[in-house]
Amino acid sequence: NHGKRLVEGGHINRSLLALGNCITALAVGARYVNYRDSKLTRLLKDALGGNSRTVMIAHVSPAMVHRDESKNTLMYADRANRITNKLERNITDVDHHESQYRDIISDLKNEISRLRNKMHESEAEEPLRPRSNEETGTEMNSNDLKALREKLVSAFKEQMKL
Image (cartoon, rainbow, N blue to C red; front, side, top):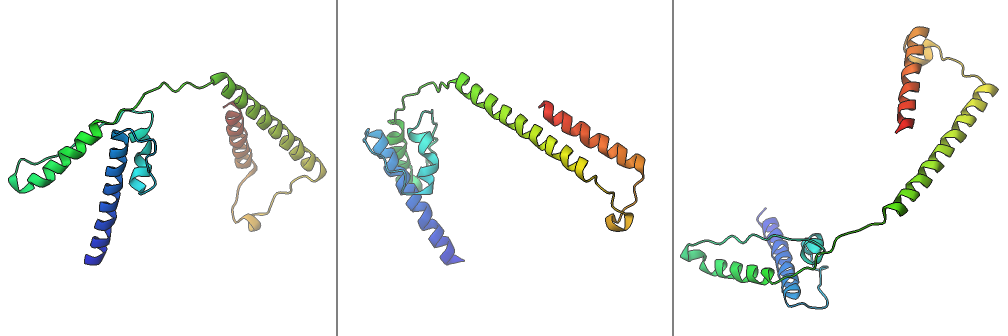
């Protein structure tokens, strides 16, 4: 258990070091920022150097025993404060996407028509034979079956409207 905590602590420290390196590179305006060093930096890539606004909160302690940690935290926060992102509005071509969606909907409607025709052809060739109660293990009368069929058809029609 103690060994696992040490290993986990090492991973956390390595991730925080990688995050510090990324923040330093972004603060000085480096051409290349290595986000690949840890999962943490990969997750925060868009928040740190992307098209976004990011807030970082630095927690410091006024106690003298935590003086060194508080100083390092403030230095870290100062470096993070120097990161500047250029925010741009994300504009997409809605007409292009709309035409793509219409094509997809048309293709799906054609597929539904094809499957309906195939279903009607197979019903005409070989009508479905109802299974016996022994095969299904249930007892349903014809009224129950009609009601169930109507529910299924109405649910299918409702889905088709969407």
